Image 1 (cartoon, rainbow, N blue to C red):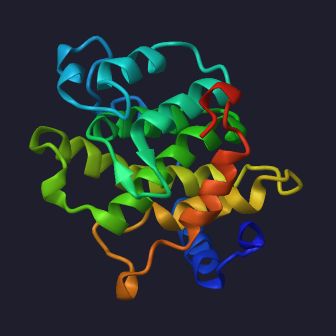
Image 2: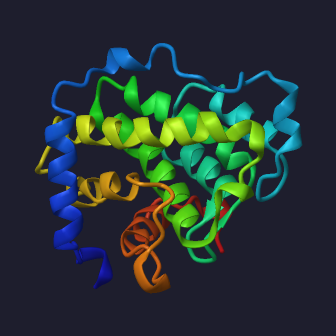
Amino acid sequence: MRANYIPIVALLFMLAGCNESANSTNEVTVNRNVLGLDDAQWANYASRTGTGSDIASLLSLPPNGDDQYFRIFHECCDLETFEIYPAAYAVYPHLEKIAAQSSDPKDAQWPLSICAAICANFKNTKERSDVPAELWENFSTAVKHSAETAANQIQNFPTDDPSFMKFMMIQPILQNIETKPMFGNPQPNSFILNDWFEERRPEELAR
C-alpha cells in the first residue's frame, strides 16, 4: 500500500527542481572531487560487513546491474534502522558522478537511489559531526549536485516505465541535507525506497 503512496508536496518539490535544472548537462560531472578508488584511506571507513575498500572494489568494476548496486547499498546503509556506515560518505560522490555521467537515465536510477537512501537516513538520524571531517566537503557538495542530477535525469526518464513514479520521489529526498524531518518523523519517501530495494535483493543476501 505504502509503495503506491506519492506525497503531493514531494511531487511539487520535484517539479520545482526540474525547472531549475532544465539547462543542466552531463558534462558538468567531469571534475567532481572523489576519493580515488585505489586510495588506502578507504580502509579507514567501516561498512556494514567490512571496510570501504570492499565498496571501492565494487565501484571499480563496470556497472552490471542489480547485484552489484544492491551490494553497494547493503554495505552503505539500512533503511529500516536508519543506519549509515562511515564508508557511505566516501561512496556518495562516486555514485553522484556515475549518475550525472549516465547518458541513459535508467542507468542513473540505481546510483541515485542509493544516494537518496543515504540522504534519507542522514536526515533521520545523523548530524554533520557524524561524518568524518575529511569527507564532509566532498559529501555535502555531492549531495547538492545530486539533487540537480536527479532533476536532470528525470526529464528524460520514460514515463511509461514502472519505476518512473518511484524515481520521481528521489529528487526531493536529495534536497536540503541538513534539514531534519518535521516532528521527528522519518522521511516518508524512505519507505518507498525500501520497497524498491527489496524488490531487487539478491537471494544470497536474504534477510
